[in-house]
Length: 221
Image (tube, rainbow, N blue to C red):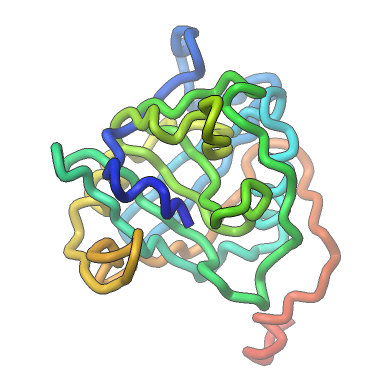
């Protein structure tokens, strides 16, 4: 996932959408925005997802939220920029847990949505195929224009921003890391931060109704 980012080492990311000023209270309810609270063992992070400009990506992410597929997973990767270790991105989600995964969906590029990778951007991780994103995502710490669409590179699907809890994100980025291989070399958090649960704050939940195999295997329903 995000294998092509390692050589550039991510010069950072996000905070608002392309070209607009932040609203007076970015943490409050807004039309077209779906808020999600990530409750982690390091503290809460509040996401504001842009369902108007990135509808397919937000729909996919919310399916994981509404099904509880993120609950009990972790922030497991801290990719720090070599130029400035205080910037980079953190990655969370289901990793390659086949029990939790949902079908992939088409890539909504930054050219399509207009949501660029600035500081605090939420974006989908993926493998080499543009349409391979699923249950893993990143939060940028500092701008990361190398993740945006280019004529020779499809980029990654940015679909919202972290509007509170970036202090938590920065602490996660600074955690000791190592292990991994290829693009992940040295970036695996030695003691992953538990993503206790992801909570929808806006709109009606739309669970997929698919079997929750990971719970059944734990003797739960």
